[in-house]
Image (cartoon, rainbow, N blue to C red; front, side, top):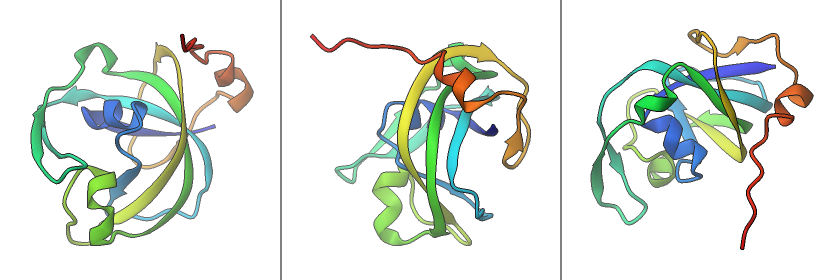
Length: 137
């Protein structure tokens, strides 16, 4: 299964469903599930909220260096101004919009990250076994 390392607090925003567009300066043709891996370094980031205002968000240091979920990559295209709120950041030169779909939180586990999309020894089925089940009351 493929994985993508994302810095905090961006990973938390994806995991919570607030960030539905990931941005990179490179594109991919890959579509499908990817493991959401949180990088080992983090810093506070100014994020763009859905109402157009900005907020300085602190990283969750408990997630650093861990795989925290599965996210479906539905496509990749050039970023447009209309993507800014879903990306939680303003458009920038050469930005590619990675369109994210369903997010499945899993029981976190440590793993070493890499640059770019990278292969892991884990299968999608094995990762689904780590799915966190939440009951809505």
